Image 1 (cartoon, each protein chain N blue to C red):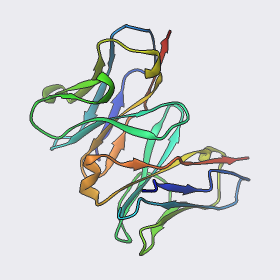
Image 2 (image 1 turned 90 degrees about the vertical axis):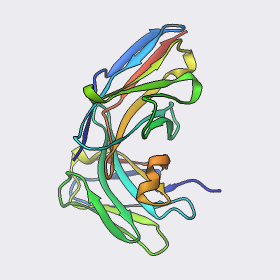
Image 3 (image 1 turned 60 degrees about the vertical axis):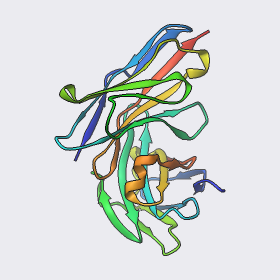
Image 4 (image 1 turned 30 degrees about the horizontal axis):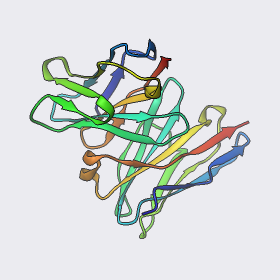
Amino acid sequence: KAGVTQTPRYLIKTRGQQVTLSCSPISGHRSVSWYQQTPGQGLQFLFEYFSETQRNKGNFPGRFSGRQFSNSRSEMNVSTLELGDSALYLCASSYRPDTANYGYTFGSGTRLTVV
Amino acid sequence: AQSVSQHNHHVILSEAASLELGCNYSYGGTVNLFWYVQYPGQHLQLLLKYFSGDPLVKGIKGFEAEFIKSKFSFNLRKPSVQWSDTAEYFCAVNAGDMRFGAGTRLTVKP
């Protein structure tokens, strides 16, 4: 079965712009979580969605937002981009939030560079 | 919310050396603990997990981890590393949502 698909793979934006990243989970997975990965910071939790509802949110400013559609695909949006937003954005999926305990499946990520 | 600390940022070992990577978490309740690995250019993959029971858990590729509740620790070990173990290793804790540590980069010299 297809894995977690994240698009685009690479993105270059300028400061002040906004960006939308997409994540299609494995078929049947309804829980999607987003992480920001930067060197030295590891993976920082952004938010988790399940059945189109945001379950949890990490400590990121309101410029970071997300949503989930009825087909479980999820998008995250970052508005008013800052240089510090440059990172690899990872999406992970599982059947339900509790089944994340059996292991997430991660996508390859979207590499965002803000110039 | 729970938090995770990984003590070593970069570890360099020679092949056949023993490995221990530290992980401590802060959360007072029941947690599920994980180690994930990210090989160069690849996705994050689950290495092993602990839910309950025997505090010594064995994962893939000869890795194991020990949960010590009194120390809030879940250290990763391997008796003899190989060059192919070169990767970044992340400890994670799930207490409602999955939180990861900053990662430890392991370089194994042939």
